[in-house]
Length: 168
Image 1 (cartoon, rainbow, N blue to C red):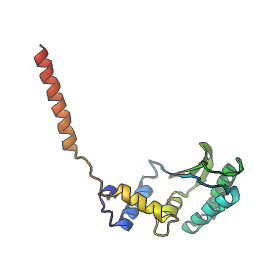
Image 2: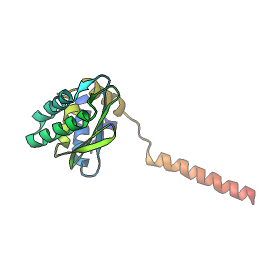
Image 3: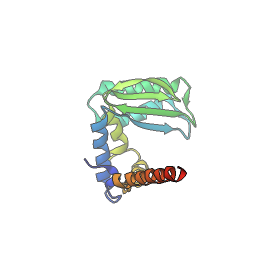
């Protein structure tokens, strides 16, 4: 299994493909969250339509896309508009995409996990800056080996044992 941390930053498409495959593989056991924090005011209808239009070409389940659009519309319309500071959270899992606005869960759209993630992570993603940031902060990470971390634990144990012997 490829991990994004082990890939070079120069392999952006490979890293993003590995991340998308990982999300698809682990969506049964974990959740991938996208958090949008608004910097300017956007009306509920415009916000809901923009996100739905981005998800629509990535899935054949048009009913689920309409559900997602309605959830966003309901959540944002409850406060009038998505104003600066508004947070819209999308929790993607095998069950679908759960939508929350300012911490209040609105509901879930079934079966859209991969399509929603692809809005941000595929080659046609809506935010190239986000894709670049993911690669910049996730690739070429050095992971401490298990033996290195267990050695430091052994050294601490040995040091503690010596201290006990000295105190006796």
